Figure 1 (cartoon, rainbow over the protein chains, first blue to last red):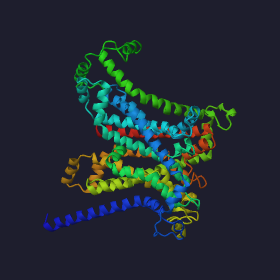
Figure 2 (cartoon, rainbow over the protein chains, first blue to last red):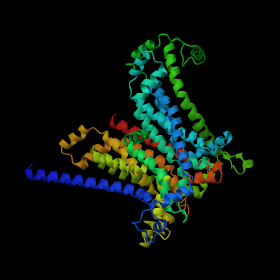
Figure 3 (spheres, rainbow over the protein chains, first blue to last red):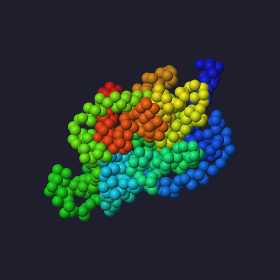
Length: 281
Length: 337
């Protein structure tokens, strides 16, 4: 290879790298633009949102947030959303982590099948379970509370947590637990104080996934919660505009309904990616 | 799944751990009733097993009570004529609901719409996702930042996705819809208001939201390919395209199939984005099975009909999963006999 063609090849590589980077940046812009537009409506005065023809430039205002606080009981919406997502995740972790551990340590030949079966709960179209669940919750008096949503969503999350923890505990050799038992810990103590601390990344990843699923859930709460217990996702629908409640209010409410999860996913990106990839497999 | 190598060590450790533990009353009783699970001869093994069963019991009980039981009840409603508003007319009708489902033109259309939506959305997501995964493959800070930003749509509630696109595409004053109408690209009533373009628009929304997830799953598959294999091919003079078609794609087949299956299952249950944009319209152009089931069940309280639709959906999902697992199994057998 002559020197000229080598430098030409290098230049070709650099050009390809540049083209790749440009394509990636274009993709990032394309996937973020609709969201940026949604958030930007929150800072536009009403008359500029409905400007004909639509314009991109605007004079920023916080008016929409003031209207939002007037029209919606924001603290109640936020606490419902928090209660649903944290409650679901707490229940799912409480039953799911021990379950995943036991299946991982079991020498029963169907342990993997059982873990798969729990993951497969997600495949059930939710209308099927929602109707009997509705009647069940009506009978025990939980209909119209966030607990109805927590109880049904936690089945999906628990199945997922078992699967995640199953794969994490499988990757963890059991010797440390046996050593702890020799040192006088009970079997449960060895699980709780020796094994669990070693899989905290897995617990964080599955907790994030569970929080995201139930925070974003719409069908279950719209059907099972009442006026006082509806979460942000349900309220967001009512914020879409007839002309008096404009997109500005929707954009402002979307800050509360979507930004928390977006920020958590960006800050704890490593765990979030683990949850998404492992949870899918 | 007995692991022969670790078993003696394990037993010895367990024995050492519980020198002063002797079988309690509960265990002796369990041994009497379930001799297969708790054989009398090995108290330590039985104790260990009891412990593991006790840890699994809560999640199994929980899922049985709050997921499996409602699901069985729900599925069984499909054999009944059952409307919550007319409870006195409830009657067992056998497979009548299914006969009605398959002979109803509206339901046939819903089945067709769902199939078109799933196939179109998943194919587009796969092609775009694979391209993105290839671009993100090289591990460097820039790729990781791009991946983190690309995943943002995945974290947004599908309801918000629907609202964003509905607002953007509004034909009267939406930033995209207005110009599309003026320039004659969309119909007078906008992309979502025209029957011929409505379903395609819903596909675009789904592609926007879920392509990054597809890219992420495929990227995980790409990163599992041994670097030495690719390096060897490069040394042997294979071009980038040759490496892609002869090494990357064949090695990726199992993870590609899995990614396709998972997206197909979720896409076949699409609801939120359609509910807030067209709610099945215009003229039933976007009426998919999930929308039809929710309307029947939660709006008209026709529980029998809704359960029938849902049962058909479940059967389709089960069929897809079976076909894909058979394909994966056959492929893996072919590659490594």
